[in-house]
Image 1 (cartoon, rainbow, N blue to C red):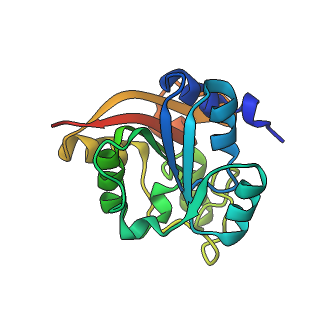
Image 2 (spheres, one colour):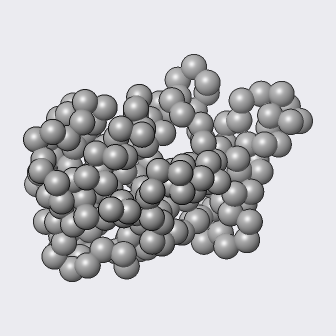
Length: 199
């Protein structure tokens, strides 16, 4: 199992985030990323999570995490409350991704988004050759128990950003635990984007 310090996307986030930054992680899960950023970048971290079990694991690590459904918005936070807001492997699971992302961009000076690529060649091959919804290492769920509500490709997300006046400052793509540089929409399993709202 890959340790947090060895995950290539975590190392990338650490390069994007400055030391001592304030960070809000939306859908923080068991707090693995938050804990990593606290250790590596000395960030002032806060998380929001819906799962009670995940929150218990976060609190056991001494993390500041609150229970909330991000589909309801972040009305308790003023504009630019945090240096960074993170939506890593969360956006495709919320009911209203457009609303959730706009709220993240409002509350954060910069927003980091990580998404699975549903147009990865293994997913395409599964549909084309097997006639079945893909189940892969990066998309490990059966159709009846998947937490994913929205199925998008890296190109879909980049097109969305262009149409909605969101600036992609940096992007990074990976397959397995290695960077994917060549034709990422075909060969990358995940994409990660550093975003700012165009004022």
